[in-house]
Length: 405
Image (cartoon, rainbow, N blue to C red):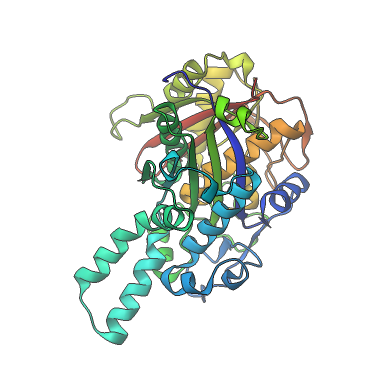
């Protein structure tokens, strides 16, 4: 079944500028941002004080009370996103065979909040550093496990940890499982670590913006780019075998048509970064040419060297200004493993509605040679979109989604 067409039939979104798929999409098309001063803890003593926090989310409104003490904020967001994605796909899990359904998600930084809670217990109730560390490591499987248990899904499961690239890597792994015979996989990422311990770890990378104006702090491909703003949330997708989806009359957003991944060479080696090759692998996998791509959803690091690498890779593949480029994450912040799956959802909605969402608050630097869609959405027929993601440490991933045939 290696050539099986894999499609997306459901989308569930929890994002800083919209709780739910349609609220998120409406805000994104309108250019409404969810970036603001942090509310979840006192960040006044830190160099970075802005984040994209999911608004209006109360776990008690969406989840059974018994689940709340067993989970943290990120897991609750993921459970709700999974519920919404399944409902959007018209799937009632108890009506399906348990081994026909699986869960493959990505995680990266959400474990910090869970680990911080365990350390708090260590100091207040007694315990050991080993148990706190084990709990932190165990978190990476929590989202997948809770979604599986809640929905009775006993098919293939897994967690991918490759930072921002993880949202695409998880969807690619889900596609592999469907091609091996699974009928349905819940996949994507919901992530974030807006908590003191997680904040310190992020500040230590030196890549976070220290700006205090939500409108100017995160400006990828801008001459004044000076780092990113973090966020929380993401998207979970329902992936199915296309034939199975048609047989049950499911609405299809689009096909996961191609995927590529590479790893950057050692710094100082003089070798080309891996992003261009990653894009080319994804295009070959989709059996498409650069001319077939109607829009690119950029990784958009907002760090000059990384922005240059991305712009050069796009120019090498598509030619200077050869394809519209957008980065709607300027309205949410970078959501770690949740970012790329949210961009994938936005790409599928672009295909559905014939519109490219804007990149906000950016004055594109001419030297990058990009056709960056800024400030307002661009009406366009979108048949195929390319989503890019890069993870800290050298991960590169690219995914092609296209209109289902």
